[in-house]
Length: 612
Ligand code: SF4
Image (tube, rainbow, N blue to C red; front, side, top):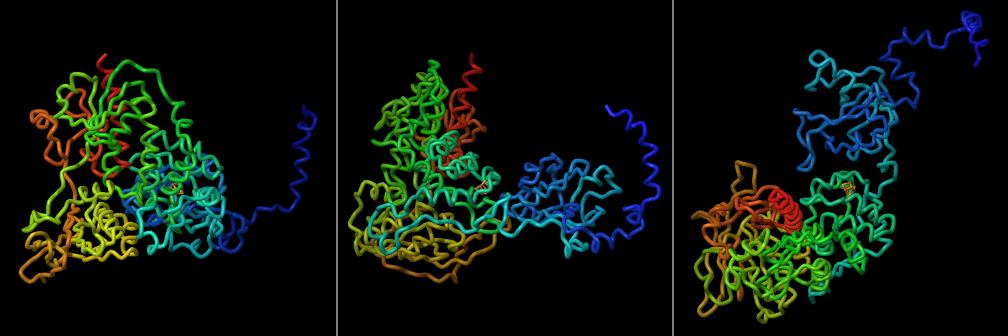
């Protein structure tokens, strides 16, 4: 209550009439000149964004305390990489508080601040003041031709991101030297110590750009943040929300998330896969994490065919929803290709079983040595259970289709790997093994053969850079002494009683007009080469084997010999029949299969709810 003072205010204001004004010169100054010369060094000005460098991650919009930034689709920009998008930030200067936090969190440094007073437009921008006056105060843009390029406003301190100094160098886990590791099937990558894991985890910006690249959209920033605060249990709990095979994925995931990690733009990406392995290995009793999510039984029975990653994931999430789950497996152990196809040096069996046992311990019934279609008909499963999930993967090997393929000494990749895992391979010490193929199975065959004492050559029909195998697998194989023949197309296998020689042609590579991998072409002029071979292992892929499914059902679900079409929830054209894993996924890897199992569990739940 200061009514007296307020009443005198007009009189006391008169004294200002005779004071020298502070600001009267500003409107008369040339703003262009003023913005360069006279500006305070702390002035932050308008935003600029290099549209080519921007990856559309949206960090700026998320961090903006004034909600002044909105991501909008730009149709005249090219995505910076396969994980980037064409969304770009726009700003509402009515809200902007010029704090510069958006600049701090920009992973590519595309976003900066000028020291300008006047906001203008990129000449090539699809938005222009004339066309879209509403956008005038919203669009913020890069103007390399303008003065602020030489005289920028607020810049992020070098090496600083998200308000902290980032270590751009990745902390790789310790690995045994190639000369040591190739002597045995022992695991040669040492999981992080607590200090190593926390050091690596603190490099994470928590931006979430990796999540979209993960085929199953794991909670990556959350589980890494839990590691950085020294809590592997919390980290594992985050992983389990979308992945009940954490240690397996920690060891052998295809880690597409790391390709998308924004720290990798200016430095080396986070070792996301190894951090997952750290949490999984350092929680001794998974049950502490898993059990708390159990739900009351709902009286409904589900069955899964095949005990690979898709069915195990399906079983886990269906069990959490209260279903009674049975899994049938044709082999004597669960795990599918993870058990028989992956060598122990990459995935020790005790680690595999740690994950699987935690799932089975929830009360899922596993029935091994049961072949569906032989021991139990598929029709019976459809009758006895409320819904059926098929996750049998691809088990029918593709053949080379060359003369000599039926000779003793010629094997298929997964057959060979099963013998390796059962320790039943023939004596390979001093033998020459030719591996045909360029995928991860080919690398597993080659590196296992090296460990068994063989001299190994991989023959691939394109170049090494075109190989679908993980780069680290290829590099490690090379370090262990595996030889590679590029653009080698198999022609014939020679031998009297068994394989003795392998002949291939050197192909020319023709660019694919659709932008895919180049096509190998063999003609009359292609040179022919021969190498000695005691064994030839064809690791060129597999097809599904749906022989257990009645033919009319195969037709009805649209099986084309390679693929079963399903919707997002794994639903087929037959009520109550769901598919997932390699049979229906575009990407044929473990994490995609886990995602398919998770979605199918939700799909079954929705389906059965609709039947009530
Ligand atoms: Fe961002 Fe990389 Fe951390 Fe993922 S791992 S949240 S992309 S910094």
